[in-house]
Length: 88
Image (cartoon, rainbow, N blue to C red; front, side, top):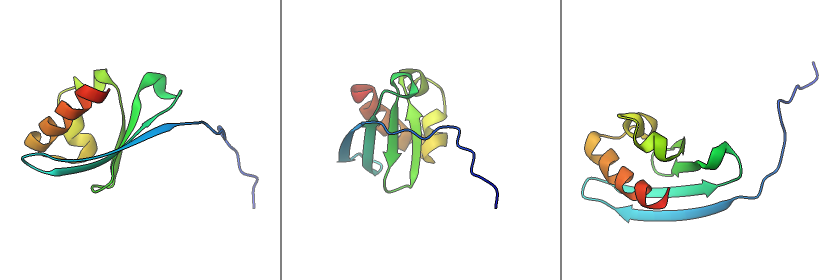
């Protein structure tokens, strides 16, 4: 067996916020992780959909990105974006 080659192996302290809310089109159960990594972006985990993305304001402005990253309809993504604009 060959020796494992790590690109990095570090520990970091994070702040995690758990949020659950119901929109008109879906329910959202999220974990938002803030860390010193990723240039100030947040790791957003959709706990029900088993999807996640590293998101900053620039990503929220990218057409179709939230739909793609979280496998959501346009209406569902609009609800999620409205919330994320408030917290990111």
